[in-house]
Length: 441
Image (cartoon, rainbow, N blue to C red; front, side, top):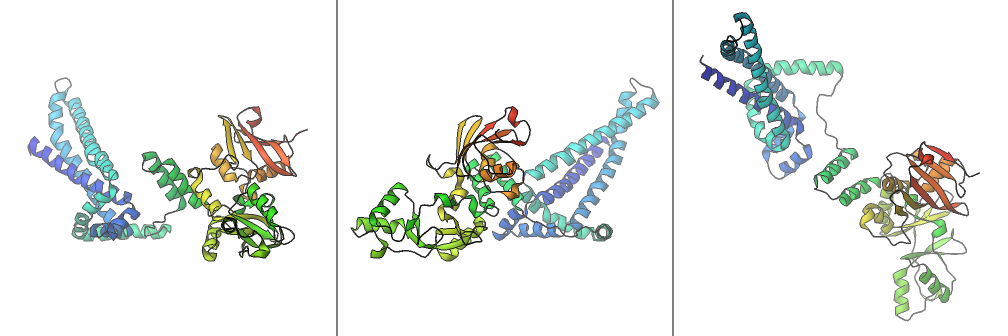
């Protein structure tokens, strides 16, 4: 065999090996979701790739037979074709025996380098760049090879299956898309510029609804603006001017005896229409949706959908009112920074690069997000920043009490009737060097 013929044969072997490399990596990297979309659009090749992914045994057996056979054949052909020419070159400087050894080493390295670059690295990177398209192009030729090498494929597949059974490993590929997978994909899309950072945050917030409790976003009991059923019109007018909201609970005697709620639109319509603003003169009281305080926000949305309401009273296990929540409260949690908040309602205010002033009732997830903290201690024991401070201090905090965690110092600035109003958070400093809690003397 001449040198030209040997080089052509090596090039052919490299091309075939590259085909098997692309076949291997493209099937493994092809995304099931994308393939399913292509199959739904009528591409039969995508459905064929999905079928191969579900039962990949014969496919990968053929790939490995091809790769190993070609690697052995390529080594034999390359050594026989190149060694004589390298030997002649090295004999100019070495004796015959050493020249032969050097020639064998040089031909071996040359063949390995050629196969490594052109039959392995390049085709695999090519297959990774667009795995679905590559897998669909290669699926049919691989089906032919599976049929052609049927006996060998059957034998090696059965041997491999037996090993899987012996080790108790799953025989069929299972594609389970988890929450972490979706968030990772959206984060990758953000880094690639496909998604805006705010859009990625909205996606994360949507999935957070399953773990955030209603009391993390509701208006707490002490901040509820509620109305007495017997309040005269002057009191009602003064109340809605002082505390403008979309709905107000209407109570009999105290806040724990809720009769229903009044919609602010009904009140404004009556005012604009010159009608009396009084419950005993026709101002309608709507039946209130009452929900327990242990629901997640996803469950709250389902309650709103079922009842066709957007306002609910939140009660605890003793049927005492602990807060109110609206559909807008939940959606604001989802939209995050995309929904502008007034200065009065903003719970986290960044004073400078290293300090924040945070309301005590701020959900702990929002605090983590604002400060960039991945993990908080005893996370299952509280929902808000105030709860975090209570758990860390093991008592009701007082003014100037402080807690340090993850390089931040949380100092209580204002307490109103045992309720933590404001917390100053500062980054760094000696107090934040180690996770700890300390109280004022």
